[in-house]
Each structure stands twice: as structure tokens, then as C-alpha cells.
Image 1 (tube, one colour):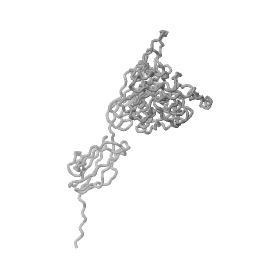
Image 2 (tube, helix red, strand yellow):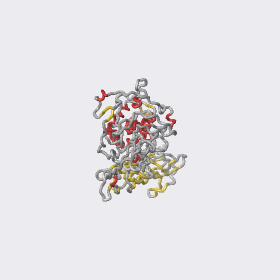
Image 3 (cartoon, one colour):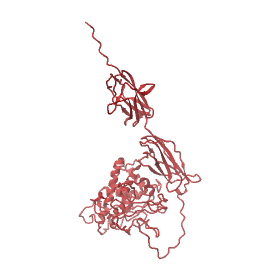
Image 4 (cartoon, one colour):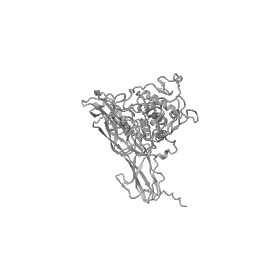
Length: 581
């Protein structure tokens, strides 16, 4: 992977300290709710509470912390040779995007253009979210493969200032086996990464700490539900699904517009860190120190770490592996433990089927039924605002709408969660849709689903021309039929054509008309035939041996549609002789 970046700017280039220019005179011209910091950069004054449209933890990030800094007032494009605008300046670094991070965004856009062209994902949207979530992977502190030198972790989601999301990954991603935390440069919570994670750099792994993996995962997440991000309404929905906050939406949109006007590449490790986290904490200075190359001593965490420091005795969970802290000189005062009220998830005792019916569909079609479950307490009371995960399990290419095999839905006021519509693939057979409660160990519910082969219920010739031939000749017209199912064209339906002995004897005839195989040999049964996208099937040319008579060709399809076609082989009628003199 490192070979891809041979032409990229050298990582860890030294940054130049520049004086901050006060722009207080410009503050009055900015939009309401926007202020400037000491360096003249715009920032949102506060973060709004999550909107009521969805559950607080039903997002990519669990509505975790983000950064409210807004773009600079000037152009995002650097002008070499202009004082304060060189790539090595703080101003230039803030306007630019670290080289590897920018490459990851553009590669993700290219991949989504192929896999989900209707989504119209711009890489600038990934850049805007990456800026707001982690300051572009902490200013591009990544190695040659795009992996951050140290983990970027959000605050513990224990129900304080943020959602209460109990551990879902046993600490595998975030190192916390009690509560979840957002992970990586795009800040995915573990339960979302479990199904949304992607391998963006082709190393066979799905690592939320790798900017290529995280950027591709974010792109797929934003493109689900068949959203078209060129449509303003779908764009807003997608951003709010990442973090359900109006201020988050407005901040991301401001960076999106800024990057659309142009940007430039800066060396990895020289980007600026955000200053204003949404939870009111501090994140330090505007630049990162030069990162250490991979394979050398692990870099010392900077004092301006973007993560909330953890209390002594709990190392490694503050965003960087900081080692074991020295014991305090004075023992801390003992405080009585606080009692945390149970969350809705804590009260769930079991899952119930909420009216799911038979799940059957033909290959390529949408399932008519949908999986629905209800979360209940031990007493049978419905529990709202609980995250339920639906997973497609088994050897199948069936997916939920949007091409995902996993979907997470929050229960409504009646405690019901309904999975997105299922879409059958081309692989026939059975599979399972499994429903489980996120963040709580209760038995899941399995629902059997079946994909049947494409079928037709009627066949008809496309012409009514008589099919005739002389002995030893060939039929002038090829047989063409159209297959339908419930009146509509039946595409992709398997069919068989056989020259039979009689209406009452479907055995293959050993004389009369025949087809030819690729080697020119006589064939009287054709298999592996398939109707086209319009339900049409055109058979190969028919030939006749020396036997005269009337013969039958029978065509059958999956689903029971049958058509018998009459073929006549007779000598050509000779002209009547003229009368004798």
C-alpha cells in the first residue's frame, strides 16, 4: 500500500508558527449563533440536543462528541508565495487536507460511484464529516497504510452528556467492556461498525482506525436507504443519521460548502486540530507534532489530545495509549457511588414476534413481508427506544434495501422494530433473518426466509406463422416465445425445449425435426435456456431429417408454464402437368 504514496508530500514536515490575526471586526457580519476564536476562526457557540426524529444512539456515532469549529473566512485554496498561505503555515494547514486522508476520501468516492452510482456521494462530504469528527484524523497522523498512530476514541457513552450505550463488542474496538465509545477518524460506535465496516485499502481487514476503511464505511453508511445525496433532503437525512443534531448538520454543511470551493493537499501530520468540542471540553493547540514512523518507538501523546483524559488507574482509554499514570500524592476523597437509573435496554427481558408472516420471494424480487419484533419486559410490557439489530444469516445473496446484510432499528412507542424490506438475490434456497437486542444479552429470534427460482405461468408464441419444412431441409423461421407471470414479463426464467413423441408421450422423439449442437450433432432436447429481460426466448434453428409428418415441440418453464408447438415436414407440392396436345 505504501507504494501508492511515493509521490505524496513527505510526512511530518515541520510546521511554521504564524501570528494569529484578530478579525473581531468581521464577527458582526457572521450568521447568528457563530462566534470567532482567538485566531479569528469561526465556531458554533454550542451544540444542540439530538432531534426527536430518531433514538439518541441510533446513529453512526451514537450522537457522540464532535467539533463545532467552522471554516475560515477566506478561500480554501492555498496560494503559494502569499504570506501566510504556504502549505507549511498554520493557515494553509487549516485550509488543506492531509495527503493520505484526502486520498482515502477520493478513493471512497470512486468506489461508491461504481457500487452505488445513484447515491452521488461527493468526497467533500466525507472530508466535512472527517473534519468535524476528528480534525481529519488529528491532522493526518497516519502511517503509510492510513492507520492512525494511536486510537482516536470518543467519550464513554455512559448516559452522562451523551447516549447510554452499554458495551456491544466486549471492548474489541474501543477497549471498554462496560460502555461503548466512538472509534477512529470517522467515529463509528462498535455496534454500527460491526455491519457498516469496510476494507478500503485491500489488506483483508476492516479497521475503524484506518482512514481508508473508515472513509469507505462512512460512504456506504451515508448511501444506504437508496439516498441520493445530490438531493438536499436526502443529504440532510444522511448527515443527521450520522449524528442527530441540528448544529452538527449545519457545521458539516458549512465545511462541505467550503471544501467544494476548492482545497489543497498538505503533508500528513501537519493539519490543524479542532479547538472547540461540542461537550465544552478543551482540545488544545491547533497543530499536531510530527508523527513517528511506523516501527519506531510509539509516539508520546500530545498535550493537545482531542480525547477526554481518563482518570488515573484506567490507562489507554483516553484516545491515546498513555501508559500507567503515577499514583496521586494524596489519596482522593471517597465519594458514595452514584446509582444510574436503568436504560430502556436494561429492562428488556425477551423478544416477541410482532406479526411477521411467511417470508418468500422469487429470485430478484422484493419480499412482500417484513420482519417485525417487539421488545418486552418480564411482565410483558412493551419497551420503546431500544436498538434491535436484524442480520441476514446463511448462504444467500438476499439483502435489506440498500444492499446491506445488517440493519439496526429503534423500537417505537409500542416497542416494535420493523426491519427494512428484504430484497432477494439470484441465489435460491433458504436463509435466516435474526433479530437481537443491541447492548443486552437476551435470546434472539430467528425467522426463516426462502428464495424460489424465477418462474412463469404462461407461454405464447410471438408470431402465428406456420412452421413447415421439406425433408432434409431447415425451417425458415426460428421459434420465439414470451413468458409471463401474473401478466407481466417473466425475465430470467429457466426453460427446456424437447421434441416429443406425442401429446400423451413426452419422451424425446428419435426422428423428425432436430436442433444442432456446437459440433453440428443432432440434438432434440435443449436445457439451460433462460428468458431475457423482456421474458422472450428465441430457440436455435430447427432442421428436418428425411421423415415426413407432423411433429411436436414442447417448451416448459420453471413454474409450470407449458407450450406445445406443431411442426410439419412434407415434400414440396409439384406443379400440375400441362394437358397433352
